[in-house]
Length: 354
Image (cartoon, rainbow, N blue to C red; front, side, top):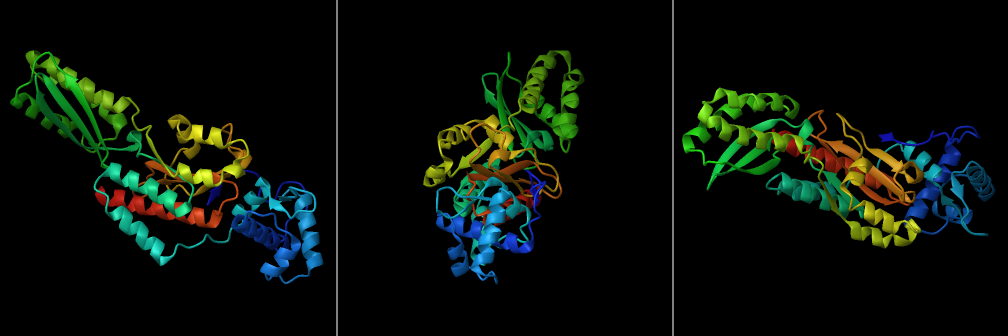
């Protein structure tokens, strides 16, 4: 698991031994569960830490001095800080395993998808339901896809529908207006030549092949062929991969008080595609789950937010990213497990469709 942020040992200061780490883990667990600051008596009553109340109080004092926990109010218990959550996440020995019922639900829900749009729609809703956070899924990036098929469909009246299908099942469509309607023979010939040239190629390699194709036709056909080729090229360069799906924004309202004054900026961020893509980060091959906590999020207005993301795609190739956003008081083991499990299953679906 990759985790953006500070040194897990907190830089200069007292090393955090396993006993103090157990105390921190107990504080995080209780605070996530109860939303209430955690005192030493609660730790003694709820957890078998194997030490006295006095030792726990001393350990809590050390954790507070080192900035891992804080006291929000006089005579109150302690709550984890961003630094405390970071240490907790960095030192996770395991993530919370999904139950058999949850695994079956993921498989059943995603197996019913009929096409890529349906896969993405189901995935983002499933992530929001499993984590009770806001979920974001990037569509597979066109720049990292290959061409499976090009289709040309006459719409009559000098109009042709250009359809580009990728190896992930993504479909891009454009309508081209032509000076004259091409006959079926010309469309069939162009379709055959395009597919012979570009099927199996990545998008960066396709452009030069398509640009040269008008010269292969008779002069009287070149205007039509050039118009169709230009439209196909537009499908490649318009960066329509910059698409994301969002679900579960209503879940954030349940945690509204935890975002201080930042709920409105967070909701605004969820409406901005560019911001969402930046939050998801750049997926690469074998992308692990990444956790960014509070102040580690550079985007303005998200300092009370934690973001858990990962890449997905067939085999070792990541074609897009997915993740969830929520308050820093998050069930990190459960959220990390859910995001990782859903990403793996979506990757299997795309791999099976290759």
